[in-house]
Image 1 (cartoon, rainbow, N blue to C red):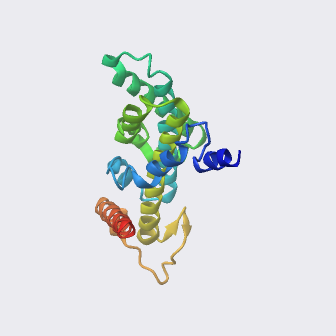
Image 2: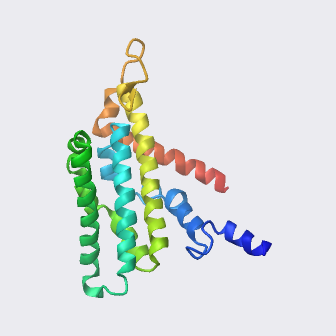
Image 3: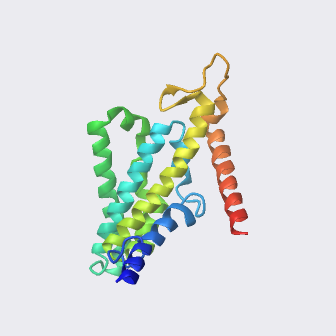
Length: 217
């Protein structure tokens, strides 16, 4: 009995995901992070990271859309004809993107205006389609939800790190509150522009990969 409990505990989610929950979460958040290791979703990541608040909302949108679309693609994986499978996947993804967009417009209008078309562009985000096609079509619904949420969280963490650096040093604020007083700090305007976003993302990817490489050695 004790051996059984030990195995269930080490599996992360016991028997619910066939013992694959822990490894799936690790892959999505750390080992196979969609931005750091796959370099996916970079354009939207750079476009919304001038403010931490925007980055967190965009990350939440991706978590919701990826998890829910993975769930429905997995549920329908045996029913979708192969020749129209990707069309069905896009339709499912678009449905959840519209739901989230309407939620923002109803309850968070200012943020909806700031993010503009970027929420809608989640429909074309390679991360969402990639997880639906590569994972959800081959795995059960619960594990597919875990995979979608993990990849979304991995994406959100990187967005938040980029946004913290850009907003803090580029505007001297965090979440709209003054963090670095202009009495002694001169904001670096370059970090709030597109080149600053590329430099920040590249620098962050380099640091994380360098640390990971050193750890693996």
